[in-house]
Length: 433
Image (cartoon, rainbow, N blue to C red; front, side, top):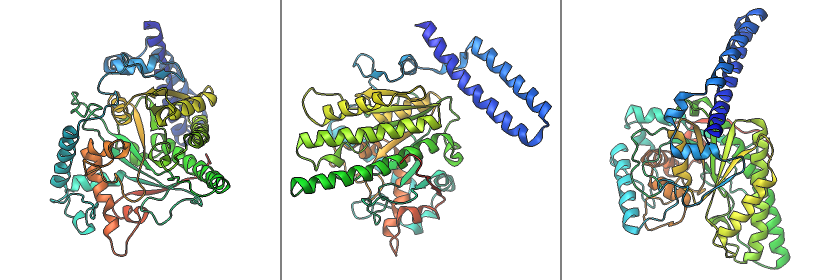
């Protein structure tokens, strides 16, 4: 066990110093002649080899048991035995009383930071006239937001939506509550990146031939949408410095994702046999996009969070079987992934960030407003998006501010409204489509 752990730590050190070597080589190309350039690289390479031999004692001291479990998992491993999961990561359904208490606490935090305003059904956003009255420190945090714009929207995208399918909106965040809906016991919490993406709601009606046509269009649209979503996730944890400046300078890069598009978005498909065929094709689309992005960046680990299968032919079991098979079918040497069974995705993202990693959490959410109706504790019992918002004062506050475009006259979409608030618009290449 100790040998395996030391090998894992050494690999982490090697990745770190590979990036240092690349950095010095790039800088030297501008400032140094060729002889000094070679000498600088040799020096840093010697430092890398020395660190590979002795390991990194700092990583050992900062690591927690859950990180050790992650490092000891082989590529493509399935992690999720009840005995392996600490309660802070294990997916948990709170009682109505607890959910209401946590939601109300988050609402109080929003009111305290947003001039006494709070989100409501018909007013989910802060009026623009109130933004200038916010504390300067809070306004400065808005500058870390990034709107990822696709090269073009798919035919199935609702281009009039506040956040159309295919676009991705990124915000730094911190989770205040763990998977048990309790305050984190550790006071050391680091920011990670929340990526808001939208899948297509599929509803099947009419004749069998018409339904098949609708399904084929849906699959083609989701291929474009998922490709852009994964490209944005890779950009967020590797390239986009405004986001990276707001999170800890991490050892590793991780993307945490649910079974994108396979939850509420497919509940309009009532025939489970038809749903099984659809979710299989959807899972392959997501897996292919992740595998292709892994070829671009060989230091990203994907964490696919799936519900625990029941053994019945239901949504949980279908999603587990389809996505697990799809990811395993795309396995290659650069594609690092872990199947996380029964793990709360928000808690996992926070745990990884606290351990010193750069992390992006994909939130497959609502196209009409960030966070949907998270502020109503009686709505969306199982929804990942709402339950992440309820447990993050940081994210709830920022989303309330950025949702203000819904009240502007003329009404604006998030892409236009977010930029005057400080967000950066980043065009996507569509390279994973």
